[in-house]
Image 1 (cartoon, rainbow, N blue to C red):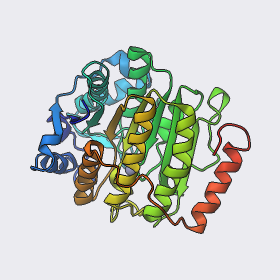
Image 2 (image 1 turned 90 degrees about the vertical axis):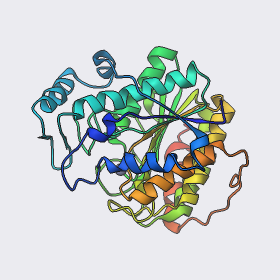
Image 3 (image 1 turned 180 degrees about the horizontal axis):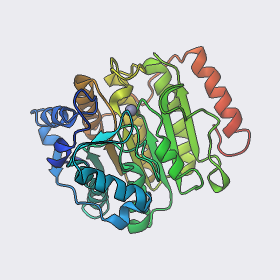
Image 4 (image 1 turned 135 degrees about the horizontal axis):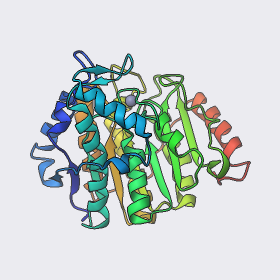
Length: 348
Ligand SMILES: [Zn+2]
């Protein structure tokens, strides 16, 4: 079903509240939902409720002590884990449904024939580590999507692409040792959470299967797109993923209050086309997107709208789009190539 994007949403995602004046606020999913319901997008989507993740599923990626800690914290009401991360009485429930949305999304992909799923969830997940909730994240939604794909559908080669402004430290850690997941992340650097330098490439069997692109503040469309065209695409064509999972963080976009990678809607459209092309070639077109950051409400909703429209559009508008990368990007590309190509991991 390539003519509609399945959107997974539940009211519980509006109830999780990390505290007043917090940028990761319920309005985020509300504005996206309102945008998706406008007449240009409504025919392109179909909304489904998420299932709730089981405890044993969450424990694939998290310790029982973290699971119990989030559960008991929420039972007490308003709670604060660190300076950035907190919640209320609905947060545990919302976090379980945000993980469960990944399970529902994969069911729609593998059992109902959908090509594209967008999990419209809060809290986000990519910072959450095995034993630690942090950076607005409680459980790692996208990492658990990879476990669902592996454990329920036998998928052995998964590409996770993380285009959030911030480095997905939690996701990286979950799969740093394995070649069953290829993790590709573009992010502002140096920046929160501090990880994600280009020389972090995995370890053991996972060596060469973590690819970090630390972008400079103010980078803009050209540098951003350059790495999707010239690094992600050739590597993905060699890895031949059976499924693509995307940590979709729209805080990489223009005028985000939390950072300045300054990517436009056109930039989002171009990387979406690249992802769609990889999916078309290797995984029957299947991509699951899960919402991460994005704190400028207008760009968050327009970025999501652009992504969904680009997925459905027949026409490939930007397949041969030419960019002019900065000297910083070219130097970074050379360093990544030295590490990954000359050591024989990938031909770039
Ligand atoms: Zn972010």
